[in-house]
Image (cartoon, rainbow, N blue to C red; front, top):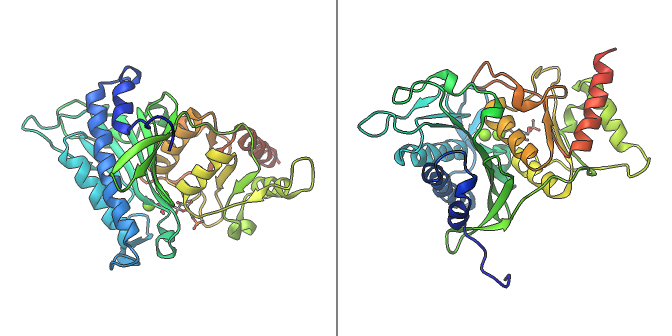
Length: 338
Ligand SMILES: O=P(O)(O)OC[C@H]1O[C@](O)(COP(=O)(O)O)[C@@H](O)[C@@H]1O
Ligand SMILES: [Mg+2]
Ligand SMILES: [Mg+2]
């Protein structure tokens, strides 16, 4: 144990209150709802093997993807926790076709915040007991306070996020988040149900030697991605790099942030915009990456400046150590001018 007691997430929020661009009380209550939900999901993930919650839910989400039982359970847990605390006026989720208007308090819509969420990321890994996560993105609403939320409250550029983060349900459970003042990581002590500041000021190493990509789609990748992968695999200088792909964005991102690396989910023939969703996967992870000194683009454009047009729109995603993302972009640019 360290020589002095680690700060809890609650204490951290109080100490940091001058950092927030908005009232700490509201954000603390919002993050408290996310903390509570993460502990309940953590319990469900940990007992998945002995409860009847492994496997498919038997229906598809709006993306046409098979929902896992835990996708549905996690979605219900987060929506309930956020709705009951009167901390948000709207929620958009990977698992819901449309956004949800949260009418709270007798005055209608008290809160000025909306949350976009991927309640369970990496859900193909549940059945094989590999790390999964939750990703969240928080904006201030842009429409008239006190009225029902509208689509434009959710279709905001990533640069407008006031906070973003993820929960990783791995060998330990962590919350990693930013409010625009750097990135901090908190580890859950499940016996106490308390998150402790375990990774202050997390930063992406400027370069790295790990690349994360589903090479099973290699033959369908754009030539620029193929050329970058060949560059990673060549015997030259500090290369070849190491290929590590967990198949869970949160877990691959978390490892790359700690060790240095790049995660790529490119476009390919069957998925012209890639697989990952801009609003509740790429924007929050891009905000975290930039706050930690990393970079996130679609191979050409900064993710946080992309104007959203649809709730569930997909976007190619190149994210991680600056030097590695910029080298990959170089190959994408060369290929695009041919
Ligand atoms: O199996 P693939 O096509 O490589 O995709 C894996 C990627 O898809 C995802 O699972 C998509 O997220 P969801 O599980 O929330 O749909 C990412 O977490 C992961 O990086
Ligand atoms: Mg996901
Ligand atoms: Mg998901």
